[in-house]
Length: 231
Image (cartoon, rainbow, N blue to C red; front, side):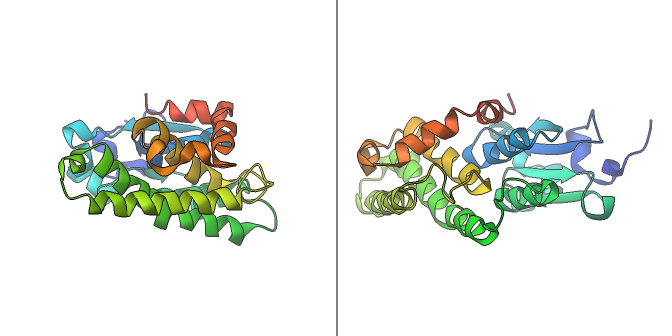
């Protein structure tokens, strides 16, 4: 068997690479997972997707933890990282930045820090708060009788949506041109509306700009392909 640079990574023993020369993506169809598959599709980078099945606790196996000790998806190995060495990465935001830097795309010229600002806004605010609302509205948290936890996150999600709605005024995309910030933000809007079914709770339909923004995003062919990963 031919040795490859990926053989040094324990995760490849559980999820063998059939094309070790391309990016190895370890993921699931959550909003954080689809961020990276969408970016890869938008950029036209070749990759191999491996499903990390939460139902069987794949994310807690020693092999997965060897790549991401935080036991979350997505994680990635780019066999052609800086100086041609393999680059292992976890955290969807960090992966998006690397892919944009690698290709020189999806960060509009002159707008790097504006793009990163909105990416960090999603990572630190919109994603975690949407996830908490989903827990209290859709999952086990809905059984908690005390209304205060759910209301705390409902109100914060409503506030964040208004921030986004205002920032989108007069623009198709959050920094004017399509970027990794949109790829980070929009999958969470889709999850809020379609999976958590929490739109009515937070006044989604009454927003001026956000609903059209999500529809523009979902209409992109690369987005539709990325949403279907890992299959």
